[in-house]
Length: 383
Image 1: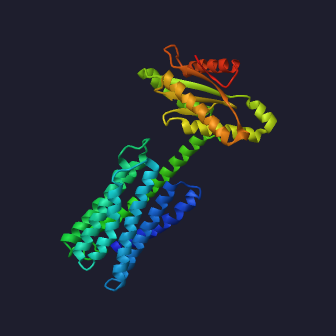
Image 2: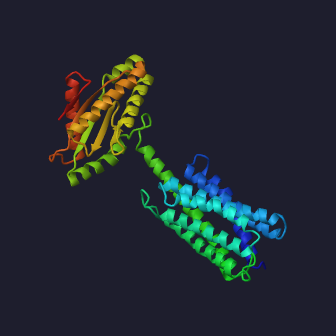
Image 3: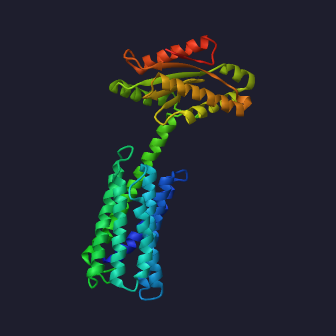
């Protein structure tokens, strides 16, 4: 029966990593995000690191030993950077980025310079790698992401556990080298470190798959809520997000402005120039709308040629100024593409205590829009 010694665990860990590195791309397919791709790269680099360390043990005390050992720690450091970048893509900006890069560069450099001093190089490499694991664990937990995601906690726990065992190995190699003369030493801390590496590999892979699934779900929800032609929110997306802004303004008593916008004589454009030109006109207007709205504003295509623009924390004077800039920007854009000349009518409603729902608010803005159209189009009316 095969003894479960450190060398056996080492080989099993490398084999498991290699299997996962091959399986993940097959499971995820080609059309994946940068975050998912970086997670795959991290696992591949981890696999290389373990292969290099196994190979270095096989050629110990030869000229190949330092080369393979340095490649091993370099691969491990690069794997950590790739995982950090993956988390940053999924969760937004993460803390201690520059510290991780410095640690990652220092790992192979310091290890190589200290290679002839066993205790120094083992302590240095393990402590620096442990610090990198802590950075990644911290990155998974804090600061808070845009949404709460349980897989973040799993990744953090995995990296912090590995950090603890890695630091323990650094203590052994740096201060008790007789107990840890090589990477395959049967010391309980080393055995525990190898087992932890195997277990956390499985758990980290599960976390990555869950993150990928969550990302795919979010992308699908975004597609469902987005108008394919213009890139704006569609009616469904508007009905999901606009009520929240409306309720927030009502609750806190902050100003809120709503524009209902309608492209003038759009049917005539479709009839005389064709639907392809009509689609180009819609995309042009949507681009102007997206470019000139604020990040807090909500823009949607709520009908064929009808659009809505919700402006939080906006009073009448600010809303009028925004509309003037929008109209001027559209005029400029049409000047660059004369074949797509178009104008719009607009109705502006400002939140009143009598607006008990978003629907009521929209009806008032719509009444302003119809008034603008009845007065000759190409203008705005406030109600």
